[in-house]
Length: 163
Image 1 (tube, rainbow, N blue to C red):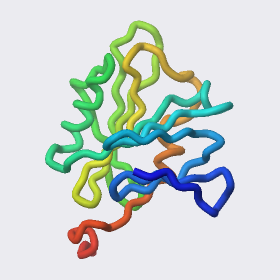
Image 2 (image 1 turned 180 degrees about the vertical axis):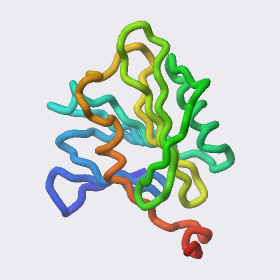
Image 3 (image 1 turned 90 degrees about the horizontal axis):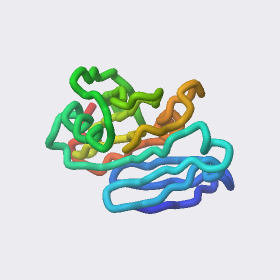
Image 4 (image 1 turned 90 degrees about the vertical axis):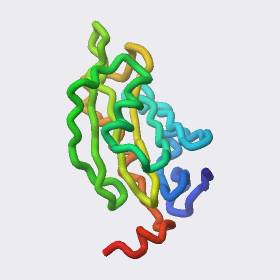
């Protein structure tokens, strides 16, 4: 994992995790690397409206549905009726899962996006371990900004030979 300033703009940087490259705005996000993951924390004016986002890389053995269910175990999420929705991230097709919390007060849904690339599964997630979170009425998708900055490099021979 590397955090690299880019020449595109003084406020941009690129975080790398496996085959994933994430371009993000350093005025809006702080990226912290951990083994197998990057944690993105909203800063300044974005902080009250956005939840933290995490990008994880895992072995590609499990299905995206199974990986999403495991990710939702961090909080109080209802996962009995998870329905995947197709998404595209960095030119790769993936699945998005939204889950309601089991909390009594109004809290945001947990969101997990799973993309398989370069022989690994990448999970982009916005989850809360408790019953607190961003403003439900902000109209902001918690993963949209980070997801829009993701691209994948083909470092797996299976990726390079795909049509």
